Length: 152
Image (cartoon, rainbow, N blue to C red; front, side, top):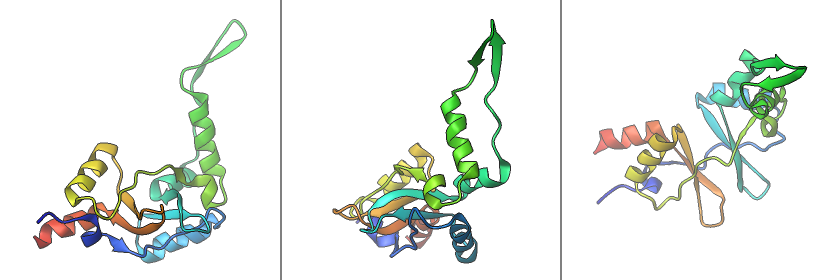
């Protein structure tokens, strides 16, 4: 019988709120040796995810988009909205300012095979697991899938 997400996910994951200070989230990630945290509202509904990747902007900063000047006009060679988003992440002080919105999710009754395919196709390292009400009940990481493979 194929394994389902509920069999291998981490139950009751640590979550943070959008107003959580960034330093607090960084401390949780470092102390717990985890790479991401679901961000939830007061009803435990998923709003986003904060990951090591989101936090790297804090350290690396942001390069302005390349542009050329032509007849007193600025022509951007890259989308300036991407620069604005990245700048916001680099300067953010709360989880809500830095988190990735609309993360890829999965339900607990889905197959582990489907979860692995989703992670591969979308290039994500973790999937928040949501119940029918949209509340976070677990998190599934690539490591969870590898451990499940090793156990079978």
